[in-house]
Image 1 (cartoon, rainbow over the protein chains, first blue to last red):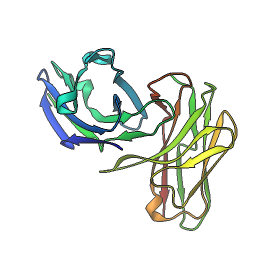
Image 2 (tube, rainbow over the protein chains, first blue to last red; image 1 turned 45 degrees about the vertical axis):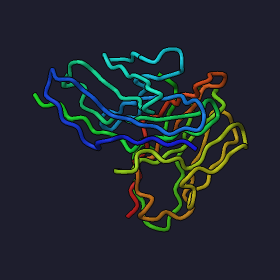
Image 3 (spheres, rainbow over the protein chains, first blue to last red; image 1 turned 90 degrees about the vertical axis):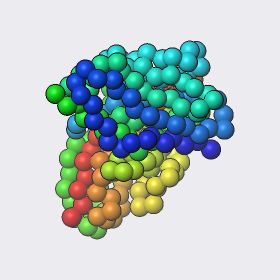
Length: 113
Length: 114
């Protein structure tokens, strides 16, 4: 069985500050892990994905995430927040093609000028 | 961007009426999915398809049916809409032959049931 927990449904940061969005997963098989971003009134867009090739994954818009097996975590970070980063972020886990995706409940990021 | 089109994008209907949402893809991908998004619940899988006429239920399938008569089209039907089905519905597709099975999403269909 697989599941995802996102800690913090709302996160606020100042512009230029570090962004840290937390995701913990549970999986009985080696997982594929994903972060998606959703801007208002839009669909979800893939931000980055972990495929076991490297534990530190870089994505679009300066975001990155680190896979830590010992902590079952896949936290999303960005060194310096920009106003355009304000959005909803979803962590997801999958066992691979044809298998179900399991999404977290999402974290809404607010960036304060 | 993946070629996924959802229609209608917005719909308001009354309780008890049938509603069909359409998802059309131009990518020739094998897997197609319908999710609903609600505050505090994230995305929940309603139904999915792994080929023409091959569909299966997700975690919240009650009150919904689907059909896939062509590779490019995946229809979601609410036989008799209820207020609890007010939601934003997303179609997603998954590329064949890619191990990760990452999903590509449509823009969503906002349904309001009065």
